Length: 103
Ligand SMILES: [Zn+2]
Image (cartoon, rainbow, N blue to C red):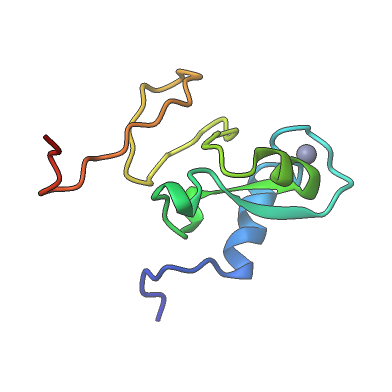
C-alpha cells in the first residue's frame, strides 16, 4: 500500500500542481513545465516527501538551487523545521545533532 516512503509519486506531484493552479509558485507562470522543488533541500535535511515539495518551473527551480524557500501560500512545512504561521521568514534552524555539542 501507500506506506510513507522517501519518495514522491507522479500522482502526488500532479495533485500538488492542481492544488496550486498548475502554476510555478515563484513566477506564477502556468505555461512552463513544472518540476518538483524541495522546499527544504535534501542537502539541508529536508525530506523527500510531498509535504516538502512545491511546483516550480525549471528556471525558478534552478534559481532557488539549494536555498530553503517556501513559496506555498498554505505551507505546512513538515520537514523538521518550524516557523510562525504567515511569517515570510525563510530562516531555518537545523536541529543540532545529538552528541555533537562542540567545545
Ligand atoms: Zn517559475
